[in-house]
Image (cartoon, rainbow, N blue to C red; front, top):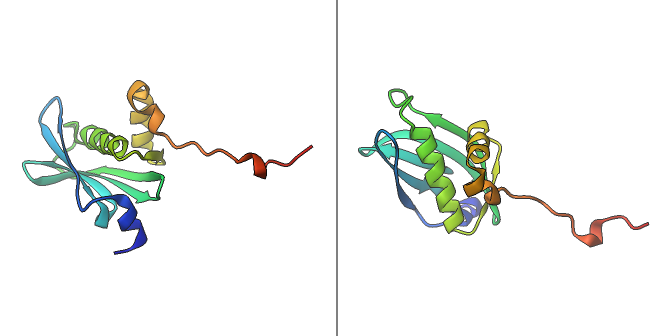
Length: 126
């Protein structure tokens, strides 16, 4: 097991997300560095990430052919962010879809966005 896999969490975490059109089961797959959204056990969408001890960097979201236009990416990202919150982590949304989802749902997810702060000891003095 690599260090990144160990940081990501348990072997898998499942969240069922009810979408407008259907139920999506969202599962963290840390060995693959992604959350998977499944409909009727079929892989429908992924949200890829890199993990650190403090946050997940979401780099790419993709919907598989045949599942487009059904809200699967939205449900997958929602489930992933809910799991990040449950685990006490933050996110760096490099993926434009994840960033836009957080902006549209700022009241629920903006607090998950990682912000760096420079310790006072590293700030040059006068």
